[in-house]
Length: 176
Image (cartoon, rainbow, N blue to C red):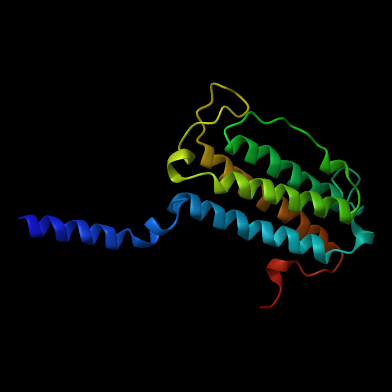
């Protein structure tokens, strides 16, 4: 019986091998992978768009290209602050910036902030509720990383439209 128990334990350890090798845990690791994927597309789009187009707006009622990328940077800080367990403050600091240099620097800084938050998270801490916008909310911290990823995808869609209007092929449509 003892040998069977030892074999069972060995099989469990062997099965959990890949998951046990990451300190984040499989759910947090997957969330980070999704975050990384869309961030890379947003950054590549921002780098690909010329400086002269950063003030471009398809219509007067929407954000400029700089405004969209700045909004993504602001959203990264906001939602990753919520994921950290802290109460976030809504700011529109980067959304108001107008140059490629400014907004791409803000985007990169927001990425560094989110990476630091995710690096401290595990599947266990990711289940903990964050006070976020309303202390009575019971939203798990990891859910804010998913919300942030969704937010970036939403606004990457704006960038794709803006790029297409200017005959620029978006990174997600480039030939590989």
